[in-house]
Length: 298
Ligand code: SF4
Figure 1 (cartoon, rainbow, N blue to C red):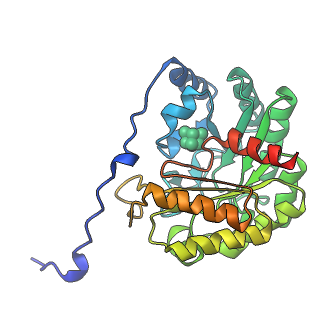
Figure 2: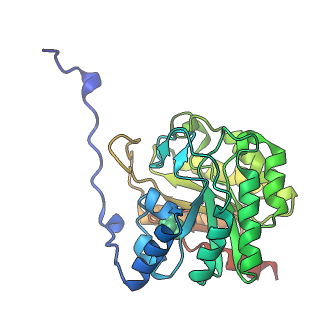
């Protein structure tokens, strides 16, 4: 029998603190959202990512809809979405998403997708069709498009921007140093470049990162500086939570005081709004974040 070596002994995971323990309350609205999404053969990030805010968001009647299937061509170390060969695009999906938005009476819809690197445009055309379809059927509804990096193809970004989502979001997810482990198929600079280009195309621009993956405070501040430099308006910062034992471990549970501190630092550096807290996810209270920036523009 092989002897256990020092390399085999993994450091113990930190104990989950009380501020991360949430009970998902399943009210009637919660069930309505779940049934509607299922009935229309749609997917939500809320479920795919086992988001801890499902109780709160679904009970408010909001959800983040995942388009272009539930199989991703990439395999990020933090993400619970399946990796594999995706199915062909469902051309009826943009209309069904718009119908879901209508049935749920959403005034703000967050649309995101898996990565579809096998498609020549990365799925930008499908994204744009979905945004247009929502706006057509729901003229009052604002749309936040949380997009992949399209492997840096500017033409794909332009296709999405031309559909005029009210917010263009793309998450950096982590600090520059940790990209090779957290998002091995992505590049920090490429994501920053995308955000900068979106700003130049007149978009309200948003990004998000997770903390607790082993980054330092200075590195988080560096991310905020980089985002300000490219013109990013909104930032979300939340605690990374390991979805299954196969995913990257949590290195540290960040204290709520530190999240508060990040919020202040970000604001002082020049970001219009920073939503920072242990349970914050990029689409958490997205409608309120957008409202803050619009009120500041006035
Ligand atoms: S924070 Fe976003 S992903 Fe999580 S439940 Fe709310 S809308 Fe869904």
